[in-house]
Amino acid sequence: MGPANKSQTFPDTFLLMGIPGLEHLHVWIGIPFCSMYVVAVVGNVTILAVVRAERSLHEPMFLFLCMLSITDLVLSTSTLPRMLCLFWLGAHDIAFDACLTQMFFIHSFTAMESGFFLAMAIDRYVAICDPLRHTTILTHTRIAKMGASVVLRGVVFFSPHPILLRQLPYCKTRIIAHTYCEFMAVVKLACVDTGATKRYSLSVASVIGSCDGFFIAVSYVLILRAVFHLPSREASFKALGTCGSHVCVILVFYSTAVFTFLTHRFGHNVAPQIHIFIANMYLLVPPFLNPIVYGIRTKKIRDHVLSSLKVKVT
Image (tube, rainbow, N blue to C red; front, side, top):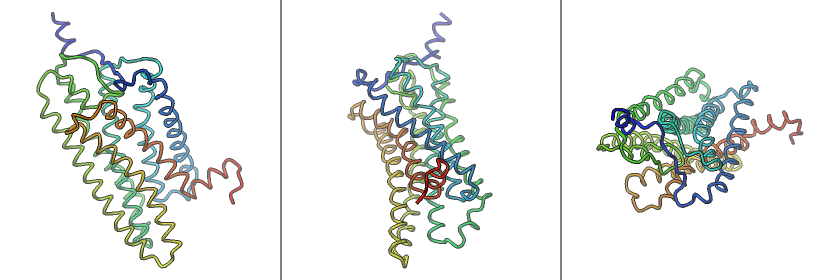
């Protein structure tokens, strides 16, 4: 009886089921997901290599971009390979400890992604609104402290997640109706009241997301106000184009995150496949788009990559 009770309280494995109702399309869904992952890995590794090799790129914008690239690599790698094993190989089993580890990486690095978006928005604000003091305000020491604060915040606020889930008894099904170990999907399998645990997770996510989103919005409003007062129309259009592409990436990240958050809280009538598909986009699209928007569209990085490939830059 002892081992049986222990297995009910502390399961050895969970079963990831993928996207409910779309199991017959898993193989095909895996193809664009894999393509996005390859672009994310190649793009972000390229950015890191270029910035490391080119000392002229050791500026605040590119240092924050490197932090964002590392975050994207960890975030996408913690989900995509395991997800593709599920889609293509039918590998549904995931060990309990591996599930909790994946959950920690997903939620903590998502918080870090949000924090680095805010840091980059602050950098753009200083660069456009106070360009003469840009490098004196954002020194390497201050950039390192900002980066460390973002990482520490993600680790501190989301370390309790796996600890809390490890204390819960699991006497219900071991099936997780999702493509990865999402906190809310796992906590629903517990056979005790988890109201306090859910409230902690939702409170932390809402506070971090709303604070970062608010300050990002304020930064870009101030940036736009400064852009419209630039004397040169060409400079205004160039700044608007850069800021516009950045805002689009940020909107994709926050809109999918908010949709996932609200679905957990209020969206009981939302079809599971829609919820899970959007939750996947929330983790896959930003790492895919960031190297394109922040890398390819940035002239210094683009020129360095092309020159490295021995392509004549015009």
